[in-house]
Image (tube, rainbow, N blue to C red; front, side):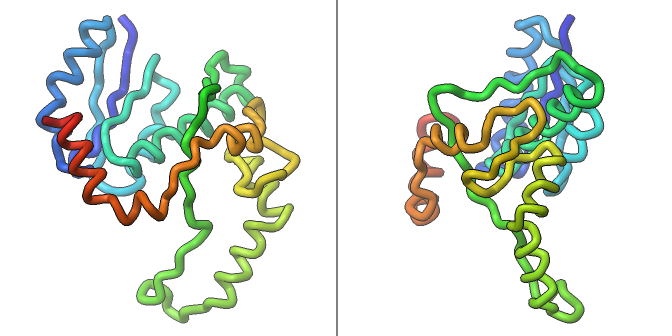
Amino acid sequence: MKTVYLIVNPNAGTRQARRFLPEMISVFNRADYLCSVYITGQRGDAVSFVRAHGGEADLIAACGGDGTLNEVVMILEESVLQRRHDDNSPLTCIYPEDGNVMIPSNAMIVAEEKSANANIEACEAVADWLFSDAGQAFIVSGYMHSTLKGFPECPYDSIDTDKLIESDMGVDWERAYHLRDEITAEWNNRVTQ
């Protein structure tokens, strides 16, 4: 029997994951997978779990919001590429050929209430380094894609970052943000009802 780790964020979206959990497990069982469930408790839990246990199962599945899915996908790619490099693993990443969604993320956010000295200059220096050639090379050496279009290096054994950018499906993130309540309602109407 094959194994699947199902990572569940019970607090995502409309908090429906627990309601559908028995059905999700049943789907995997009918497909001849032994399903182990990991419930996240806070941001970063999915990252920690996948880093520690991602290579132990035949399949990793995630149920949660965009944050949970982003954590799992990002770390899975990093973990697979690192295992291919370090252990000559047969694991592979399958990149979509018909388009993907590039999700913008911040390089750094400074919360003044959490900074003892609100050292904005130091934060700017770190951000400048992250976007420098040396900073981007450091990111790529950690099996992550550069955040810059046209950067000449890509993670070990990965698809070129510019190819991912070229196949971006072009989500209007600002519009999506402003329509988030309507999008959530329509999702709930079509998927969870």
